[in-house]
Image: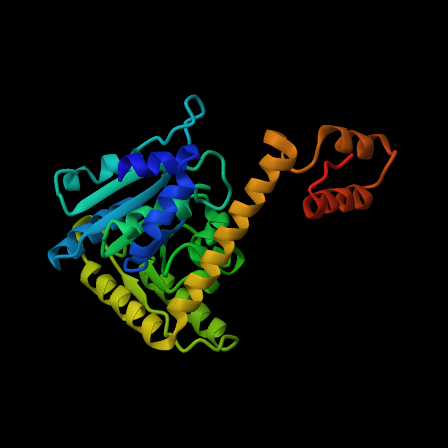
Length: 303
């Protein structure tokens, strides 16, 4: 599995063949995304979830997207350090991948890495994003269930509406609930969720779970909420719809990357000459974009 994910990260030429072989074996894992601002305890919550899920006999994989090292471009591996107590468990697989500057809190290779872990037969795949605040809404496009973790006193209640997390959160967790202000945070979240639900037709009642992940307090309730959401997804048909949208986004991303390589090399779809012409004022951006679209549809090179 580690070698296959390395192939994914490196964009190896054998990747299409690998994905074709894995496709018939995927679709069984419950992909749970965990997101939240830095310092709310995502890694601690993830480690506690692993323990609880393993206690139910489930095989668990973790894909932890770390910030990239500015020197090597690799993951800093901070999440694996925090989860070291699970390192010798044969029913747990933990992999850190580098975000490599990709916005949205996830790595460009994340979708294919998730497919590798899904095909490997894990019951639950936990996808933990880097803590990049409001950009983390991308995790919702990759997960079956999105868990948004907040903490008292960090401004999460005020920032929730701005960040768009009310729309992406399937389960909310107020971690470090033994701190002052936890009751206010829970109340604010429930109020905003109630207001948001008036404009939504989804019949899922978004729970707010209190946890102290460092002591595993509230983790059983969180596991129950994840199971309840999984059941609702399957019974309502929302799971198939979410996975269809996810596949659509993956196909589009791969197709665009292929077109960029084919027409523009490493520089992308737009050639330096075309960009220079726009910069010099000899053509405009719309005419240039029209040339690029024409090149894609006809297979010719944009001038």
